[in-house]
Amino acid sequence: MKKWLWWVPVLAFVALIVVLASGLFLPADRTVRSAMIGQPLPEFALRAIVPGKPGLASTDFATGQPRLLNVFASWCAPCIAEAPILMRLKAAGVPIDGVAIRDTTPALQAFLARNGDPFYRIGNDRDSQVQFALGSSGVPESFVIDGQGRILHQHIGDIKAADVPTIIAAIKGAE
Amino acid sequence: MNMLPGRKIIVSLLLLLAAPTFADSNLPPAEYANKQISNPAKEAEARKLMETLRCLVCQGQSIADSDAEMAGDMRALVRQRIAAGETPGAVRQWLIQRYGDYVTYDPPLSPMTAPLWLAPLILLGIGGLIAARSFRRKRR
Image 1: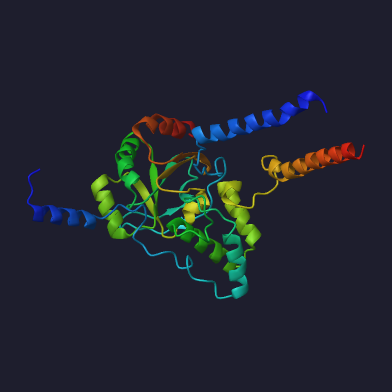
Image 2: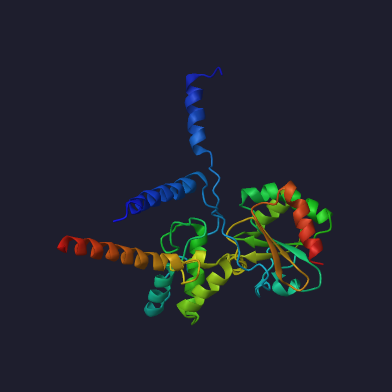
């Protein structure tokens, strides 16, 4: 047997160690992203949950105007952190609609009274079914929907102050 | 701090009572999260599919095994769709369309997953080759 062949297992072993060590020091990204980006918004029609505020349906979107779809809940702590940023986006002229996950009217009313209400409409997604249809895997998440009702952009987690320009640019770009 | 011993105990006991913040809603689980479909054949189909679907928030568990609220809602989704006459394959496809192959523990053969299926065959081939060569050498 050729002498150099003996090095093959050694090199294979070193390569394995490199793969394992890099996995150890650079943990994989466990974010589950929606595969629906670029797709039309799935059809849905959610009932209202807050008196005086209409429910939300997919037909509310393809109106020629891009909108921000915010998946949130009154029981979600990062949603509280996100609320002032949503108010800021609203002030900047971004139309925002909400999908409330597993929520109740009194809890949601208290949440909106305390943290502000940036929403034009809020749909009641009692069993997370619209959340699944969107390919969303948690709260809060936001989707930029263009005027034709297509999903353009997904933001996972609460929108932070630093993300505001990105979101506004995505909305402006969708016009 | 200057606290009386009795007060210290009371304060520590009060800390036990402090409500931890749960990342879950206060609502009861969806109707079909833990309730079987009345048709046992369909329930068996749904169950089989649930065991191959990944819980999105726990990630190491199938939705059949997980107690997470979202896993319960996913079980309800699977049961309702199968009870309504959809095939397990269609429900699985619907979820893959939304979350990618990641959502299933039974990933389809694609360029990305091909090494998973091909590597064992290749390694077996190399092993066979080495074995054959060493046997040949012994006979000499």
